[in-house]
Image (cartoon, rainbow, N blue to C red; front, side, top):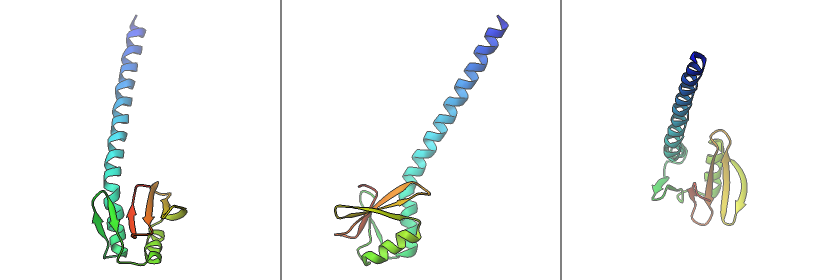
Length: 112
Protein backbone atom coordinates (compact mmCIF):
# COMPACT_ATOMS: atom_id res chain seq x y z
CA UNK A 1 0.00 0.00 0.00
CA UNK A 2 2.86 2.37 0.87
CA UNK A 3 4.55 1.62 -2.48
CA UNK A 4 1.39 2.59 -4.36
CA UNK A 5 1.11 5.85 -2.42
CA UNK A 6 4.78 6.68 -3.06
CA UNK A 7 4.33 5.88 -6.74
CA UNK A 8 1.26 8.14 -6.96
CA UNK A 9 3.10 10.97 -5.19
CA UNK A 10 6.09 10.62 -7.53
CA UNK A 11 3.83 10.56 -10.59
CA UNK A 12 2.02 13.68 -9.37
CA UNK A 13 5.33 15.49 -8.81
CA UNK A 14 6.53 14.51 -12.28
CA UNK A 15 3.24 15.65 -13.82
CA UNK A 16 3.40 19.04 -12.07
CA UNK A 17 7.07 19.62 -12.92
CA UNK A 18 6.46 18.65 -16.55
CA UNK A 19 3.48 21.00 -16.74
CA UNK A 20 5.53 23.90 -15.34
CA UNK A 21 8.40 23.24 -17.73
CA UNK A 22 6.06 23.12 -20.74
CA UNK A 23 4.32 26.34 -19.64
CA UNK A 24 7.69 28.03 -19.19
CA UNK A 25 8.84 26.97 -22.66
CA UNK A 26 5.55 28.13 -24.19
CA UNK A 27 5.76 31.54 -22.46
CA UNK A 28 9.38 32.00 -23.52
CA UNK A 29 8.49 31.22 -27.14
CA UNK A 30 5.70 33.82 -27.13
CA UNK A 31 8.05 36.48 -25.73
CA UNK A 32 10.75 35.55 -28.23
CA UNK A 33 8.35 35.74 -31.18
CA UNK A 34 6.94 39.07 -30.04
CA UNK A 35 10.35 40.62 -29.54
CA UNK A 36 11.82 39.04 -32.69
CA UNK A 37 10.53 41.72 -35.02
CA UNK A 38 11.91 44.52 -32.85
CA UNK A 39 15.30 42.83 -32.80
CA UNK A 40 15.32 42.45 -36.57
CA UNK A 41 14.36 46.09 -37.00
CA UNK A 42 17.04 47.34 -34.59
CA UNK A 43 19.75 45.27 -36.25
CA UNK A 44 18.66 46.39 -39.72
CA UNK A 45 18.50 50.00 -38.51
CA UNK A 46 22.21 49.78 -37.53
CA UNK A 47 23.03 48.86 -41.12
CA UNK A 48 20.43 50.98 -42.94
CA UNK A 49 19.66 53.96 -40.74
CA UNK A 50 16.75 55.27 -42.86
CA UNK A 51 14.49 52.22 -42.46
CA UNK A 52 11.12 52.75 -40.78
CA UNK A 53 8.52 50.54 -39.12
CA UNK A 54 5.11 50.58 -40.76
CA UNK A 55 1.90 49.05 -39.38
CA UNK A 56 1.52 45.26 -39.33
CA UNK A 57 5.23 44.62 -38.69
CA UNK A 58 6.47 45.84 -42.05
CA UNK A 59 9.85 47.51 -42.46
CA UNK A 60 10.06 50.24 -45.09
CA UNK A 61 13.49 50.11 -46.72
CA UNK A 62 12.50 52.02 -49.86
CA UNK A 63 15.21 54.63 -49.24
CA UNK A 64 17.75 52.02 -50.36
CA UNK A 65 18.50 50.03 -53.48
CA UNK A 66 17.56 46.36 -53.57
CA UNK A 67 21.17 45.17 -53.51
CA UNK A 68 21.90 47.30 -50.39
CA UNK A 69 18.99 45.69 -48.56
CA UNK A 70 20.03 42.21 -49.66
CA UNK A 71 23.63 42.81 -48.58
CA UNK A 72 22.43 44.00 -45.16
CA UNK A 73 20.17 40.97 -44.71
CA UNK A 74 23.01 38.65 -45.68
CA UNK A 75 25.34 40.35 -43.18
CA UNK A 76 22.67 39.69 -40.52
CA UNK A 77 22.82 35.95 -41.26
CA UNK A 78 19.89 35.71 -43.67
CA UNK A 79 20.37 33.46 -46.66
CA UNK A 80 18.48 33.96 -49.92
CA UNK A 81 16.23 30.96 -50.49
CA UNK A 82 13.94 31.58 -53.46
CA UNK A 83 11.70 34.08 -55.18
CA UNK A 84 8.00 33.92 -54.39
CA UNK A 85 6.30 35.98 -57.05
CA UNK A 86 7.58 39.53 -56.51
CA UNK A 87 9.00 38.62 -53.07
CA UNK A 88 12.47 37.40 -52.23
CA UNK A 89 12.56 34.86 -49.41
CA UNK A 90 15.42 34.99 -46.88
CA UNK A 91 15.94 32.58 -44.00
CA UNK A 92 18.11 32.82 -40.90
CA UNK A 93 19.02 29.33 -39.73
CA UNK A 94 20.27 30.59 -36.36
CA UNK A 95 16.93 32.02 -35.25
CA UNK A 96 14.65 30.15 -37.71
CA UNK A 97 13.07 33.38 -38.98
CA UNK A 98 12.02 33.97 -42.58
CA UNK A 99 11.90 37.46 -44.07
CA UNK A 100 10.40 38.52 -47.36
CA UNK A 101 11.59 41.48 -49.41
CA UNK A 102 8.79 42.89 -51.56
CA UNK A 103 10.60 43.87 -54.75
CA UNK A 104 8.01 46.36 -55.97
CA UNK A 105 8.00 48.49 -52.81
CA UNK A 106 11.28 47.48 -51.09
CA UNK A 107 9.49 46.61 -47.88
CA UNK A 108 10.45 43.75 -45.59
CA UNK A 109 7.81 41.58 -43.97
CA UNK A 110 7.63 38.42 -41.91
CA UNK A 111 4.55 37.25 -43.80
CA UNK A 112 4.89 35.35 -47.10
